[in-house]
Length: 479
Image (tube, rainbow, N blue to C red; front, side):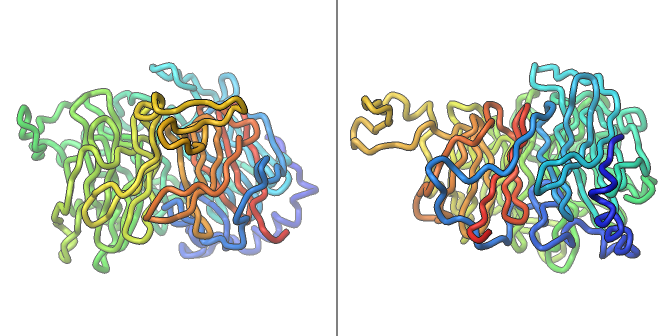
């Protein structure tokens, strides 16, 4: 472990002075005004409250503040109290590393051995983003190592090997569900058999508080499938998937919402008792649920690729049942990025493969598609290239933004979407339900395929990560 104690002595003093003495002070959402302390930001929705950001970017893109070569992984960084934490892999070690968020200077790191090999040939690094509180940094590795470190210096508080502790069948792509914090409870989609699909730990000690979800949830569940109207449980099947849980208050009742392998489960955060479940998964075996549920008032929107599509549930006042308002296998098929809600619509990337990937806007009331960017598969034959290299629509002669996004991730801030496409295209898009309107675009420095981790926005700076690089861009209008 390495640490720059001289540079951070003052910061450590402040952290110790205000170290958490009650649960309200150590919830990620209680971070600094514009920190990004967990996956998809303060509320886990991909929406930032930041303002005073650039309305239009320079042609070459926002100013580059710093850049670093890093290890592999699909884990987005997290930022709190001026500290950025990245979970990545170098050779045979997973590394949790802390940097100064403003300068990129290394502060501390903690490493441990990893032998994970992705069975489908994707990279072997971590998939889950760090969870940062005032005191702690919590990470979950590709082989299920749950680790709690002190945020100040990276020293180990506690650690658990979840694959050993629980009977966890092998997943398709390793462990990929970022934990969340609800009061003193660390909620983790462990995926253990037979009924430890979701486990709540005391986040200070690692002790188990409750566990639920598995055979008792899904054995005999109604699927709506003609060939298997009732699901028959198999003790070797996967319980978990790749969607991170989220906690929401609906009708004055707290719900832990977990989109696991078979569908959505709502749990009481205090007891772990099930409120309800909803079957939502692909018929094919090699498939995952990866997008987080999107909660608006008393509705929950679910979306997945693999020909699943989307569904909108409306939770009844009793909190233990729901109505299905609509379900559509074609309107929005989010693969690994989570949709964003705005002005009665959901915005998200649809498509399992790059050549069909496109950004879509769908009406929340009806599920109908309001607009979409053309995916490669539908549009490539209708495009031509001019001598200057620009791409035009052959029919309308309109100059088209190029390259197309393919798949990607989007966050929202200051009334606009910030889009990172999987080949490194970075775009600023007007947040409107009427049409797709791109304001600015550039090739993000050092970003290349696969740029799959979601963008991170903290205190006016945008952090982007791909398989071998981490960069910081300055989006502030006022310096």
